Length: 568
Image 1 (cartoon, rainbow, N blue to C red):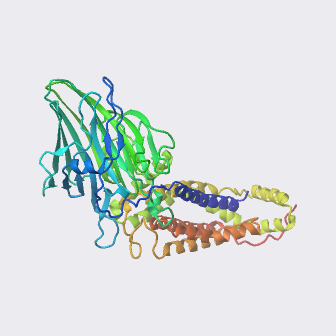
Image 2 (cartoon, rainbow, N blue to C red):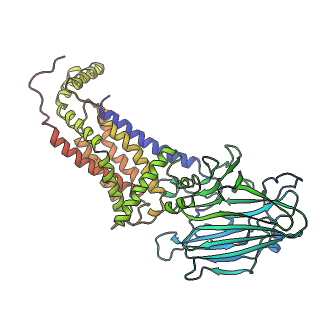
Image 3 (cartoon, one colour):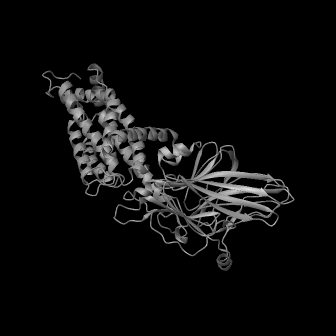
């Protein structure tokens, strides 16, 4: 098989892979009607689903709570007082057991002036999303996530200027002398919220309870298509049970079976495009992770149960967890120091590509520290990758140059053997062997660059640091498509010029027609890709074209037919 045919096959494989990924997104589109989480919402009056503890069984650990809708009348009468919290990066609404609304103040929904902040948690029934936490007990009264009330009354709390943190306490008073004091602690410039429950037993008997923490969401209906970058990202639930696990939001959230994973140091999360929420317990806590589809399957829930506590008379116990509500900032996520939590930045479900994506982002971030512009950092990354692959690409283009030299002789062989393709292939391979030409010499760089391309594709789609980041002139958002299609057109031009320099020995007319359409196919496909990715591909192609031209000029010879006939 000649080199051009191999290149053609790999090119079409890449197109097929990307089309397959797109078809998969369309197939997995959720059925529940909702809008994307980045759409501005107005809090509704509907009270979210309530956690109802299972029937107690004396002497046993209580079952995970089930979720059921609360009747409207009792919900209205029992609605807990709320506290609005404002920090330098977050604006939240708490009702004690739940974080019902969360706005990310530094992340506008769009670049339109006056655009509101991204709302991650919302009470709107059409795209309800909340973090909830309460207690269950097998033999004692315990508060669910509706039972806590603000210790200092309802109102607004703000992080004071110059202060490093602010705390908001809630409390539950049990009938048997047990008090649970819940404290939310918010730190400056942090999307990590510390949620601490202190159980104080002033009664005469031992109190036993198990804390639960859960994320409940109406799955967003993300419009599938190359024109919507949000559809490229994973939407679903993820968790750590000794390895990274994930479950998509689709028509049957539980189609791969229910989960009942007991783990020490695990966590649960719901990631989406650029943002995520997560419950992270203490590293030495043992929890049980489970999934559910409450409200007749219209909502998706991921929960962790535990740890459980036994508090004797006159004693107290404390359990603490962290709630993340914010963007997928790589440096801050690493600072969480939870096993596998960096995988919520979903460069790939495959560990090797995820590792490659993390490496590429590290290089990008390093370059950005010097350059200060993500677009020029992408170009710098291309240069570094080309330098790293220079020995391979030099061999590739040298092989091209030698093949170009012998194109007239190959054409003579083709004319001599006519339709006898077998004899033609044998004669061509003998010529390659005699002249020490490796027809596969140009394939290895292509094989190496394909995973780099795919990994960088996910990096540019997933990285929130690049969200709405400008390059210059007409490119003002590297994670959105080129608004004027200038980069895709440049990509077509670079591919067309590269074809002119690339030898095509023995190619039949059908292959020639297919090759002629390749620049157009890639141009149309990349017209809808993030402009940062197309910038990478155009720069990579342009540098490759320059290198190929130089190597052809240096190692190639005039493609003049030999004076002597080629023997059969």
